[in-house]
Amino acid sequence: MKQLLSGNEAIARGMNVFPQLIERSLLEVDGLVPQYQIVIDRQQDSMDTLDIMVETAPDYNWSDNEHLENLRRHTAREIHQALGITAEIKLMELKTIERSIGKARRVIDKRELSGE
Image (spheres, rainbow, N blue to C red):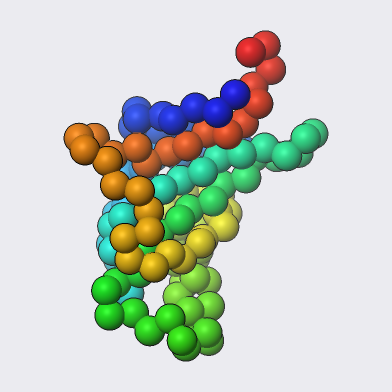
């Protein structure tokens, strides 16, 4: 079951994931803009995975792979400190994450939940 959650939280790995905390952490990182999407998934008989796709600033230099990796690692540390769980950070070029009119859909839950 794939669902889009528009609420203020989701649960991943038994922890509450609050998009507001993620956004606050992303705003602390130079080189990012507050346009992001959270994807929660679960591999068969495995733990939940948490991927955060976040856009880089308009002037970000995508040709500098070392700087790109440093930004990704720094962002992952900030998210880990805020949430207490590890997330895979996927940096995206500006305006590649779908925009929506009205309240943004920040969390996509792709987990197959038992009993559904």
